[in-house]
Image 1: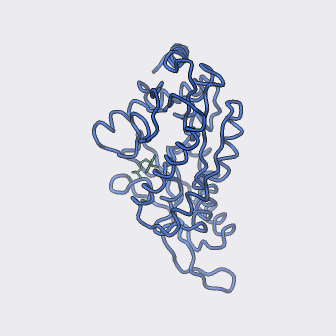
Image 2: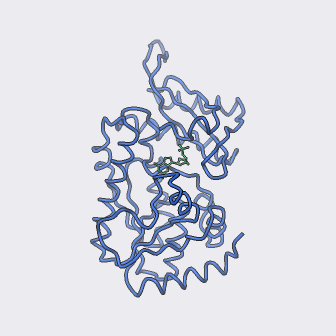
Image 3: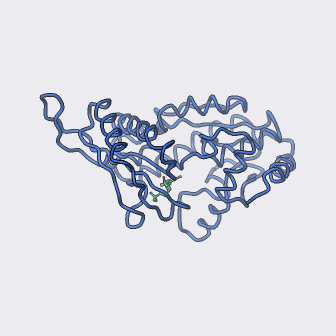
Length: 305
Ligand code: XMP
């Protein structure tokens, strides 16, 4: 447990000191860590904070609009780079290459925008478990000590370095951030590209985005899962109207977990599963089947790629 009022006061003071009167940029994704950082920094240095949100085209449905609304008061700069990301990913099926493409593009776009602002400091939402996992070499996708940028900053400011995730959520609540941010489910950096098993296409991304929106609508409030998602796991035969169709198979996943390292499937009522199935198959013509995944982690991972 963290004394949130004391933490907020000290973090604001540290950001003021460490930023040396200069401009500070942050890649604000809308995840709880970067959101808390941005809110703290805004209180600390006001307009010297430049939060940049990159729309990769791989975000959840309505995400960009919602983040723009929530963080409008911070002067959020929204960069629409969807075409850049989707063009680069088109036809790619290797999961690691997808991660690499998205990661590299992200850095390129962010650097371009950050350089234009003249900011001298980078603000990052690194939290304590990121540091430990990175030191232990467990996960490679966390960015400790700064994004691997080529541009030079005078320094990196990491106000959340000593906090665990649940403590960050407490601070988010104390800062008055909405519940949807404070209790936001994790979302992978490569976004929906890793929820399309195999080849990425614009059509597949649109389908999986719609399916994820329905799954979240049915499950989030009722089950408060640690994470829930849908993935396109292949094609299968179905029949719609009088026609046989070779349509997408959507796998639904809902898990509870402490830290993402292990996870257990959630027991969803059959009625709720049927609601997900009927809403997905009726509103997305190219989906032929919906299945529910009951595999824990291990042996499965949470995402499909
Ligand atoms: P897995 O699928 O490995 O995922 O069980 C564990 C947690 O990490 C998220 N995840 C990622 N997050 N970049 C990220 O920032 C990634 O490349 C990535 N891959 C998986 C996943 O959503 C889950 O919460």
